[in-house]
Each structure stands twice: as C-alpha cells, then as structure tokens.
Image 1 (tube, rainbow, N blue to C red):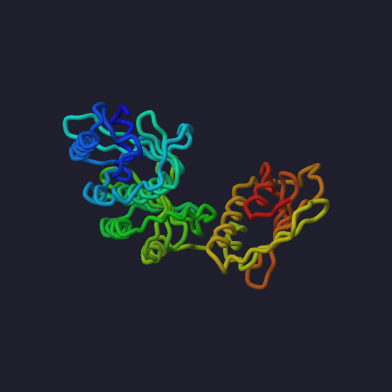
Image 2 (image 1 turned 120 degrees about the vertical axis):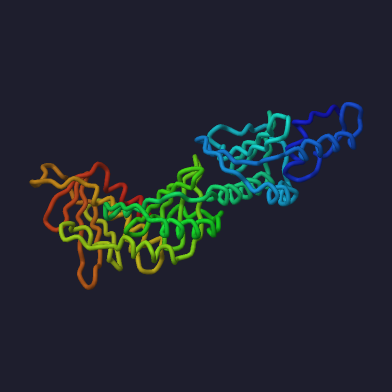
Length: 351
C-alpha cells in the first residue's frame, strides 16, 4: 500500500504505532517509513497550544514527549470531518528547518492534515491537551494583577507581594477535567485580571477552591488552595450596603419556588448552605434581580402572577412575586424582559 507521511504521522504522535495495514511506504518497506517518522518527531523543538481566538501557550517539551506514547489508543480514521465549531485547541509542534506539525483537537475528534480521527483515543487526547494547556496557560512571571468584586462594584490594583501570592497559587493550581458548568460564582464574585508577562488572564473565583479562566472557545477549570480566597476577603472584604434591598438575600439559607395562578411549574427548594452549586445558583438569582429596572409607579397590564420566589434570611421570609416581564419585591415594582423564564431555567424547574 502506498504510504503518505501525513496519513501515518498522527497515529504515531498519539499512540506510537502505525495504522494497521498501512505501514508500508512506496517500496513496501515499513522500517524505512518508521525511521522517517522518527526523524520527523526527533526534530521537534517546541510544542504550543493555540486557543480558538489565537492565544498561544507553551507546553513543557520533555513532559509532552514523555507522555505522548500513552495517548491515542483506540483511534481510527473517520469520514465525519471535524467541524470548525468542534475545534477547542490547535496543537503545534515546531520543527527545526521544517514546517510545523499542526493538529486540530476537539472533544470527540481530532484532525491532522485532511484526515479526521475519532474514538476513545481522540477523547483521551482532548483531555490530555486540556490538562497540558491548563498548565501552560498559567505559566510566566506575573507583572501585576487587578482584583475586582463584581457584586460590590469594587476594583483595586494588587501590590507586588499580593501579586506574588496570586502567582504562587496559580502555578500550583490543578487543572480539572470534570467541568463544573453549573457552578456560578459565589458572592462577592471575585475576579482577577493578571498580566503574566506573556498573556492576560481573566480568572473568576467560582468557589474558594475553584477558578475558571476562558481560553478561546474553551474554559479552563482549576482547583486551588483556599488560602488565596481568604486573602481576597482581607484585601477586599465583603460589605453590606444599606441602599441595596437585594443585598440581604445573599445570606439566604433557603430558596423556595412556588407556582401560582395557571403556571405549571413544580415547587422546588434550594439549600444554599448545603452545596456550593446551590449557593452559586442562589447568588446568580440575586444578580439577575439586581439587573432589573426599578419602576417609579405600578405598571399596567402585568397579567396574572406566575410564581413566587421566597428567600429565607435568618427567620424572615422575603418573597418576590413574578409576572410576565415584571416582579414585585418589598412593595416596589421592577421590570426585566423574560426574567421569569430565566429564573425557572436557572433553578432547574421544568414546565
């Protein structure tokens, strides 16, 4: 069978093996083909990963080459081409005096040249590159950092010592392949914008021990030491605001949704103090409420009440009455387009 280096090189990169039945070169000499591919890999000088928006991060070359043979088992060519929307990373292997090798990586498939590969090997490759990219993204010598608390509308620049602590925490972070897509940021919604000297990072602290950093179409999640969150609460303490009636709701220990009128939504209850996921949902609900427009008078034609959302703070219930595009809270009216539907979706209630 006639051989094509571009056809065979990707499986070698991933598994260190030739595709079954396709190991021969034009002269029927598989050993010569294998030697040629070994030479191709031996010329690799640098490995990087590109995000879908063009940010390039370096991978540790020796670690990459050491772990490479463990990747890509159960990998097969597929007629189903990797689409643009499927791409999460572009893996680039730079070689001396030769064009770089480029592999497009998706969650379920990867592409090298004109060939797409699928199977569990492609899934394993994605997970491996996800971890490698996660480590590379945090690399650098951090120059400065800016801390924000979104819920408090506060921002401050960190000093050198504070920036160094952020760097130490981030460099020790562990990439998490199990993505917490349902985890919303906990109050006060800390964010860190960091200049690593090589790129800008926009990190959100989802919980005291978890951060998320966007990287193109992907989001990198990490487990970090909780000591950084403790420091953030010292540098920018959460504070109560007397002019914000929604602020007290962040202290809720229970949230209950009860359908009223003709609304066919099952009753549900969330316990923000039991899990960070439910606490994040509760805090996100409050952010949605705060983004509404306060009205100076009672709106006309609000229709029937759809449901009630009750926050238990201490021993006192605070009930919000929802209508189409309006809600009433503590005697005041607010408007926000389709907020009622967003609340139902956020809390996981099914019609």
